[in-house]
Length: 362
Ligand code: CP3
Image (cartoon, rainbow, N blue to C red; front, side, top):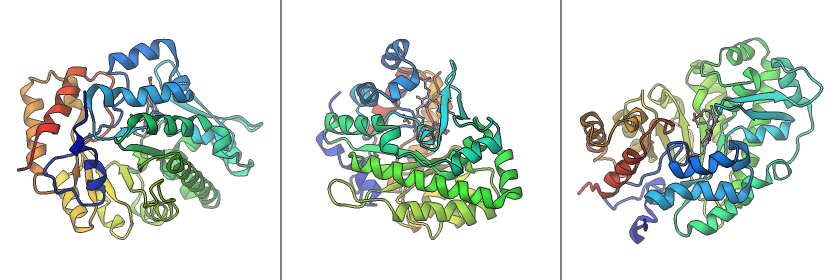
């Protein structure tokens, strides 16, 4: 599928609040993955880790959805957890792709062991730990031509939950308890992870990314105090320390978390260029806030619809209703509320992308 010439700048124009075209840029979380027969074929031969940490394979998989559906941006195929290996933690994905994090030092593999490993070991440079990710970005950048490439990182809080819990824990109860009971160690770990995030995003920008996204998936359950005192100021510090892109211009930062409509007032003074709207939040409310603060807004379409046939009435209605609701916001970027599930129907995803590409606000 050939990308129409005039769509190349849509995504970046929306990020600088300058999309006057009447068309909506579209990309999708987990746009490369198990719902695609082409990804499944590669996955039969290689593990998820091998794909992510072999530059040619990661580049090949990054390009799959662009070649098959002509989305308006690519996202490098990797995972938020690999940078933790620079802190002597080991990242595993089991047969079902469920991640686990363990200490690779002498310390025991429990919360205190993992935290001690992460905080007191000498930090290894990310260029030495995961050079494959940055090589994959250079390769993908050249192959993509004018289609923008998005880099990403887990945000400090979400990475911290993996260190404390050792696995995915959306409610992050132990991490919240750790903050309540071991504040000093919590702060050391949080700041160490923040430095790791800045290093990771900077290296991705140097390798050629045009925009970077912070994934803070597990930040929705924290108290307002924790969000306002640690999470929001951290986004600000990260944004301030990002280097310029290869073209010498500042690189836009996108922020993703869940329960965004509850958090808006804590983000009033924080600089980033786009806010993601999860499925639970009201898109109109988040878009209104974004417009007031001169930011782009992206996301909110419920990925559950992608498991339906594209002729399904519910899917068609949900899609049209979302598109109508953002007709007044020029800097909306179409995306989902969270990643494409592996049960998604390939033809429905293709249909969605084509439909949004042809939809015009005028
Ligand atoms: O969006 C993209 O296409 C880029 C690649 C990407 C992946 N993970 C690939 C992946 C990105 C941006 C992520 C982010 C990520 N990883 C997050 C934050 C966003 C979110 O989904 O909340 C988190 C929390 C992780 C950690 C992680 N990695 C989990 C919880 C899982 C298992 C759940 C699942 O979806 O299976 C992974 C594995 C993973 N990351 C897969 C992919 C394509 C499945 C790999 C496979 O089996 O082939």
